[in-house]
Amino acid sequence: MPDRSGITPPPEPEAIKAELSGLARQDPAGARARLADGHDLADLLWSAWGPELGLAGADRAGLVAHLAGARREVWLWVMGERTWDELARLVSGGVLRRALVPATG
Image (cartoon, rainbow, N blue to C red; front, side, top):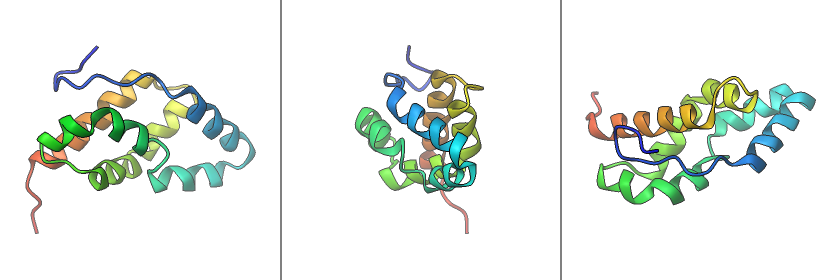
């Protein structure tokens, strides 16, 4: 189901979740470092949302940056404390807000 922005979450990436969950159990610091990178979900989400995000002025780098900044939320999804739909909506909304609000400097 699309969120208010009209962006529909792609199917939950079970393989990525399982891989990160296994890493979190074996090496929590390594899993956190990977989440800080922001790239684990970026390819999947950009391939699903790139056209819509691009129309709003977002780019893949902004998506990666938002995922890195939302690593706690991604961690909660990996650990089963947040649903995929919740995470996807949080990420899409955050990326769109960043794209639509001009940077101040």
